[in-house]
Amino acid sequence: MNKKKLAIELSKLEKFENVKPELEQYPTDSELAAHILWNAFMQGDIENKIVADLGCGNGIFGIGALLLGAKLVYFLEVDGEALDVAIKNCKFENVHFRKMDVLEFDEKVDTVVMNPPFGVQQEHADKNFLEKAMEISDSIYSIHKIESKMFIEKLSKENDFKVVGIEHKEMILKKTMKFHKSEKYHASVGIWMLKRKL
Image (cartoon, rainbow, N blue to C red; front, side, top):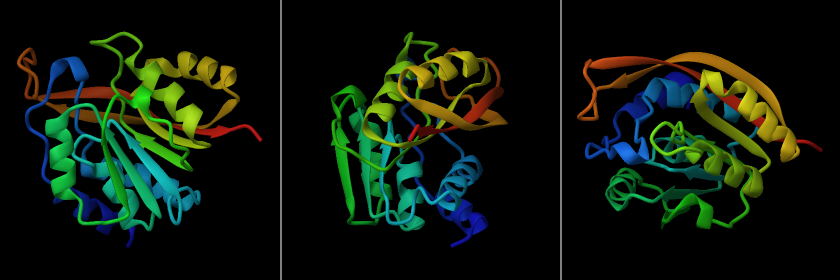
């Protein structure tokens, strides 16, 4: 499995269509997901590791982690419809699907990979995801608005994490919400790699 093949496999997954604005359910496209997962894999944070996909949507990150040799993946999603799509997409057995708020999850994992809400519709939704990730894992790969840089730096410091890397990307958001006026939106995002301080 290489990065290109991973992106192709992830592009075949069924999308979750019935998105809910209050949950900020913006899908991660297969190229971006493969890029993030491949980076995590090259850092030694996927293969033979226990991984959590927080707010998994259609399961793209968790399934990608399994394709790259993850030992076990937890798929967490508060939306039952989205979780049903993830279950349908997943052909692996070394998985746990949990319909729950991420704040209720208390299993320890090696790595979290996630595309959490940006906290636009529900203030601090992104903070909840990050704090839970810092509580349960040592390595985090996460997508946030690029202007969240200072907030993530501060939160990391408070939780004994360090920002190992930030990669600036343009994320294309397709028209999925009723209030969207354009067919596509270009969002300026950062891909954060966070590690617990030793």
